[in-house]
Amino acid sequence: MRPAAKYLLILESAGAMTARLFDAEHRHLSDFDAASEEVAVMTRGLYAQQGARAGEWGSALEGHSPVELAEAQVYTLDL
Image 1 (cartoon, rainbow, N blue to C red):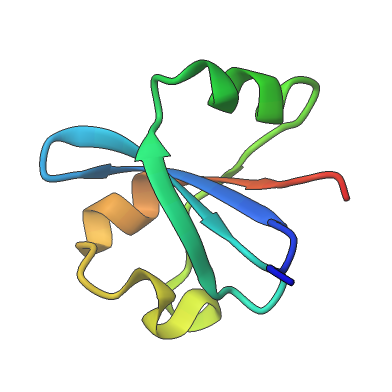
Image 2: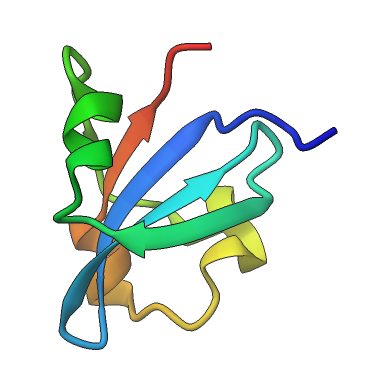
């Protein structure tokens, strides 16, 4: 059984806004276009934390620049 998504991160990647789903242990689950309707549905009524701290996310966000991490929007999804 696939783990449930706990976090949704919206960040710029190669000039495009990307939505990235992670489980409770910050394991990557999937990526999709941040402009999709799913993002609006998933984040309805939620507030984003600004920035994804590299120490907290470890290698899960490896490859993203410090600027991309600082500008990331981190949503904790309702379970």
